[in-house]
Image 1 (cartoon, rainbow, N blue to C red):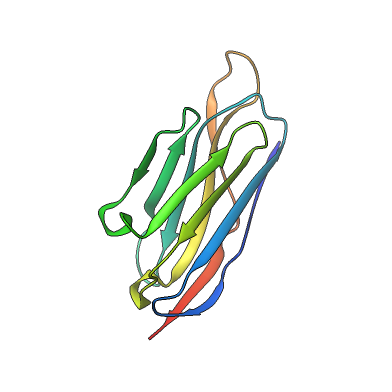
Image 2 (cartoon, rainbow, N blue to C red):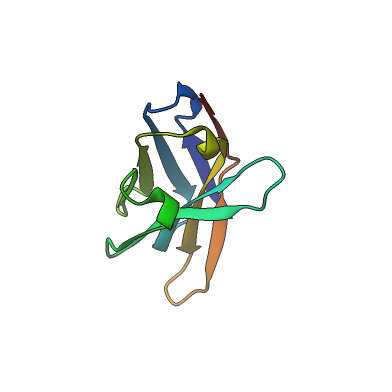
Length: 121
């Protein structure tokens, strides 16, 4: 089994910064993608940013220039640096690891429980 735990959420004023961290543990053979998703009240969960095992990052348009995703595959950790936060960034943020538990095994998505970020105006 694989466990994913996020940390670093909280309350911040508009224009402020937060850094989210995420760690995966358990039976992990390989990680192909580490992603950050968010879900605002009444909205669907959406991708915010991702980073592949090869270090290729992808950001949704509204994240570009403000958020930076990084990851350390050998340590099974990921982080999301968020700057210039806006009230519309208020949401629960989820970490996702796409993991294979064996050589040649299928990849499955594992999710953290989420961390709340509230940006006040």
